[in-house]
Structure formats: structure tokens, C-alpha cells
Image (cartoon, rainbow, N blue to C red; front, side, top):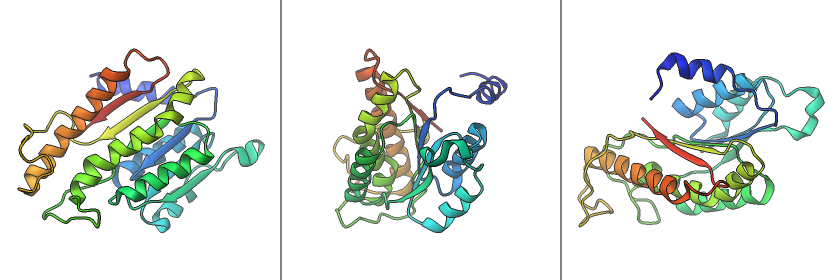
Length: 220
């Protein structure tokens, strides 16, 4: 892993010749918000930015702080919010379908949705909420949106996915209880970290030799 100064220097040089499209799932608070704001500042408004989250009010506040879209770009560049409660997989599916129907590419997909849970809470779909946010919805977003990432890569542009979740800090998976019926907060956090690592490694291994597929990374 490169030292921080090298990363910071690389970031300051980011200035693509095209207008990138970046999506931040969980982009209305925490790490997702910070990354969206940093990306908007670095691109100086020359980027399509989509914040995906539950609540519109914080998204509106964040977007209002983004650099103004240059007048010469007109309506070709948008900074927008897409509402999605990612704890329900049907919502994730519908959101991805909506994005697939109206945008032509994705250059950067950042997933930071989720947090620490102290008790098991099942969704209406019968899944543990913490597992949905920390693993299932991330896998769904990546899988469904791969065609748009592929289009960016085919055009010679960046196509990158970053899933932020306790990289390499997981634990052995209990193959007798993959859905974590025997639930505890520490077990849920560690296991979903491992699931996230496995998902990323499988994606990288499966598509590493396909030039049209994006690079996929996880991070702490």
C-alpha cells in the first residue's frame, strides 16, 4: 500500500479529459459524504455526481455546497440525489434499474452504506439488516451496475468500485450458519467483513483478464 503522501499527490492530479460519473451509495453522511465532497471539489463541478441514501434533506445540503456546474456545460452535468432505503433489497433492485435506464456509464462507484448494529433486526424480506447493508446490498449494486461500469472501461475511461468495510479484518465464516441466525454484534461485523472481502476477491479474480470490466477494491 502506498504511503499517504503519494496518495494525496495522485489525488491532486486527478483531472480526466472527459466528464466522469460518480455514484456514492451512503453518500449523505460519514465517509461517503466526505468522499463525495472531496470528489466534487477536485473535479470543480465538471462531474456527474449521484448521492444515494434515505433522506433528501442532507443530500440537498451537500449538493448545495458542491462547486457550481460551469455554465458552458449546461444540462449535461448534474449533481443529484436518488432516494433508496438500501436495507430492502427490492429498493436496491429498483434503484439500479432506474439508473440503468437513464445514465450511460459509471466511472466511480463508492459503497459505504451501513454501520454498527447492537441487535439483530430483520427486514420485511426476512434478512438481517446489518447483513443487508454491509454485504447483500453492496453485492447487488455492484452486480447490477456492472454494465454501466463496463461501458466506461470500454470507452477507455476509469471504471472503479470501492467498497469501504473493514478490509482484511474479518473472521472465519461459519458454514453451518451463513445467514447468522446465531447473531451477535461482533459476529455480524466480522462475518460481513469477510463476506465483503470474498465478494471483492471473486470479482477481481473473475474479471481480471477482461479489459472491459472495472477494477474493484475494498478498504477499511
